[in-house]
Length: 153
Image 1 (cartoon, rainbow, N blue to C red):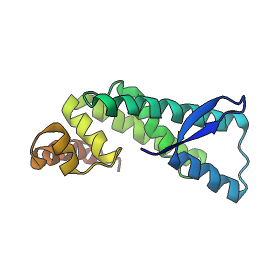
Image 2 (image 1 turned 30 degrees about the vertical axis):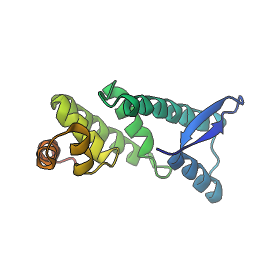
Image 3 (image 1 turned 120 degrees about the vertical axis):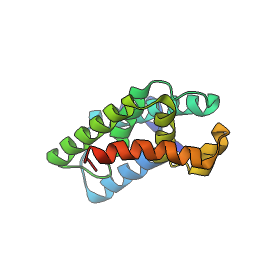
């Protein structure tokens, strides 16, 4: 994971992902005026997400607090300034997916997040968990089928 050092309006140092850095640059080029409190909040959430994720990769045994990953999904689905309607739809979709994931087994949830949120391939997940690639594929497919059956995507 690539991150950069950034500064809050009170001059405190934080880490932000490269994606958020590029999004700030895009907003700057487009002339979007962001309040300092809003940009500070984005940076603080990103910094917290980076710290939580780094702990996961250093131990590679647990996803830790599931709610923090759903909160991170909220932050990283912002590609541009969404309308109020788009934001409400995104939040509702994330809420529904979150409720579906909470009903899945820990292993299914972990594999689904590794594949769709962290972008790992079936092979990479199988290698990390020392299982067959088809086992990972079936596990993720079960979660995808649950989501499809809810007709939210």
